[in-house]
Image (spheres, rainbow, N blue to C red):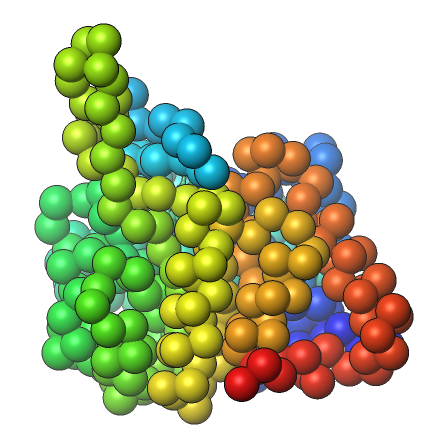
Length: 300
Ligand SMILES: Cc1cc2nc3c(=O)[nH]c(=O)nc-3n(C[C@H](O)[C@H](O)[C@H](O)COP(=O)(O)O)c2cc1C
């Protein structure tokens, strides 16, 4: 039985990786999960300088998931390179660094710095709903997506995966723009913009007023978007959004994802990633699937 996947020229021992912002760089989770068992770890978004993030409260539970407006709090690329990358290099797993910025130059500064580092893939977050400039504004305009992808591709030695927002009318156009810009792959979905109001205080639950919705309630939307995007482009797709167990992950793979990211589920059960790896193997045994590639995009 072969569960390994070639994604953008990198070999993943299985298709299960973490979702940015929900797993740190694995330090805390390594108490619960053997990181060697994962296809890869995607780190929290990192910027050129430290970001404080948004004021609190910045997370809230909602039906079928959560809202977050963390605002990409991060220690900046220098600390990240000195602290997080050496930690992850101790493990036999792929390192995918999630990159964020307010402006094109800020993204490029981070990518430039990462050229000196031994990391496998760059995931470029052009889809965060929680920062006022950059992020989402790049990701919602096909021209903007193509331009920033081109600029990053010019300097990156690692494969570049553009992370797309679901907060658009037509995901196919955005996926095509990333491909036109030279992206090696795309990942989706980031969170959907939501809002929660406290009726007793008659005010917003999140200090930021809006937040990104994640968790099982967004899964059907994510499956639909991964299906549409994977049919629109010829580059591989990393699928995520509300994957809580192996069945959800298999559904995403059948829709067209070569790899899957587990996000919010880590907060419910920190061992979800390894359980999904085991569940996929069980499914393959049950249905006599000898190679996971047979499942990718098998439902057309
Ligand atoms: C608390 C939190 C922080 C996140 N931080 C990031 C981030 O730094 N960069 C990014 O690209 N996505 C970030 N995301 C989005 C997730 O990576 C993922 O795309 C989204 O949550 C959908 O997957 P899920 O439903 O499995 O959580 C974050 C999500 C959550 C819940």
